[in-house]
Length: 219
Ligand code: ZN
Image 1 (cartoon, rainbow, N blue to C red):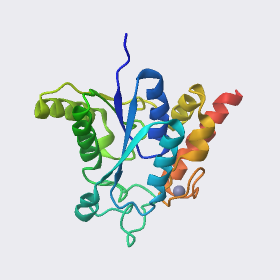
Image 2: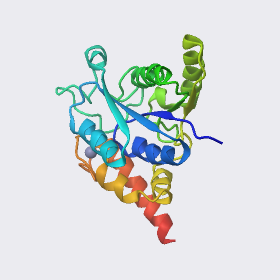
Image 3: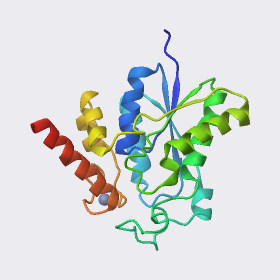
């Protein structure tokens, strides 16, 4: 069967970069889309650009600055400190209202212009940190809405939906790209590449997963 093309929502972090390599085995051409929404650490976009250049993947950075104006959050606002633990009620202040809704929607609009039906996102319900827009039900609902809105077939792929961080590391290992994911991606909320600051919730999730994955390997 002839392989089709796909658009990936790409942040240059562990999850979406693992998905990029997953996609390279499944699809013909991959086009990566990143969004500039005023992230404190613009290094995130630089990482995304570097990874795509090295992998020969077409990459576009779309302006989403309106998101920062409308939805205050600690990833874009210098005067807000990142929540180190999730609140009992509501979403953590690292959650950006509407982010995945907008990113995937813009990805779909882009895809249709290029006659592409497949969209890939690295969201995961297993490690969803209380983010409602990482849940499977949201993705399925959006898939239907996108098809109805453009009268066009879309398939949103979520290879990480039901796996946790340790299993995401395992996927990278099985794809033969563990080193690239460990050293060249940026997940840290404080904008430090690779191992990160080690202290923010994203770093903790990432390093706990890595340790669990390594324990599994040594058994
Ligand atoms: Zn960090």
